[in-house]
Picture 1 (cartoon, rainbow, N blue to C red):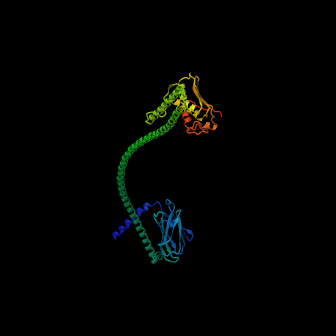
Picture 2 (cartoon, rainbow, N blue to C red):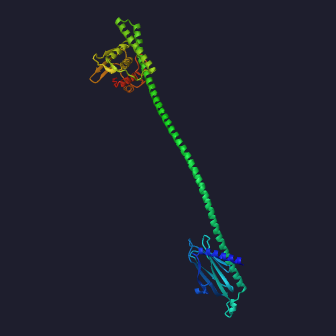
Length: 459
């Protein structure tokens, strides 16, 4: 018996602690109507006990002292252990209607809770019901019927159940505390693991930094090597362009040299034919021999220049500029081409002035220019034509002119006269070959000497 009493007291103490924690929300009776007539509060406020008749109709209103955070209160209402309803109240106010109560002590329990399942102190109201009999004695009113005893037992059982539930809630709080301690240990373990992982990450980061520095050094070396390759490529490209230009220059030079060899070779052939076919005076024979010597010497000089270019000892476009006599160049060309003109029945006249001043020029190349112009005139003039070579000069310039009485040059041919390989409408009068290179060579040499050349023709 002592043990039982101790346990009950212990449960009551725990309940007191639980209620103390939830005293902020309580349920109180706000009004009681018996047969539609409000009962004075003093009739039930003292001990939450109201005396009524079994036939009375009772309307009990109740409300909470405050509201939860969400403003919704759930009321679980039961009468004599039988649930009346369980519903929400947004304002913490509700009511219940009771009738046909059994005689004796009746128990009304209102149990509040919130939306999160938290339970608060219950409202317990006792209703002592008497039979509706005014003649009954006071001893009858105080007598306990079997039903009253059953109801009282149920109420006591309900109270015990409530206390047990409260103890379980307290146990849950203890379990929560234990869980929090375990969580704290878990957090501590996780913290230690995080520190270890952080150290590992730092070590890996340092390794990556070292590798990155090594890669950066490698990238710098690769960029340097790449720049060297780019420079070498640029040099090779420049060299290629240079070689292509040099090759083109060589091709042009060889074309010019071959063309220039053709003229003195043709002259030599013509001179030999003159010696063979005609009776010549001693003076004429002497002139022919001089022309043969000059033509052969011209061919020899051209061959030497070609050899120098082939061995790359001489620049293709090199010019040997010296103060030279233009008059002498004209005289040499006229002397070489005179036999060729005489063979075709053409008069070749040298009207160059003895006072022609010397000029800065490449003597051999200018001589080639004059030879090409005179040779072309002979090639395209008919028998009986006249060809004249003159020189003019003033304070600023020196000029030479090759004119003839041939058929002239059409306007369409003038436009392409100095183009390489140009084919003109006029044809050689003695069956000679025309390559279209002569006047192109003339224009190139004159341009390289910063001079000018033009043609005037009347048809």
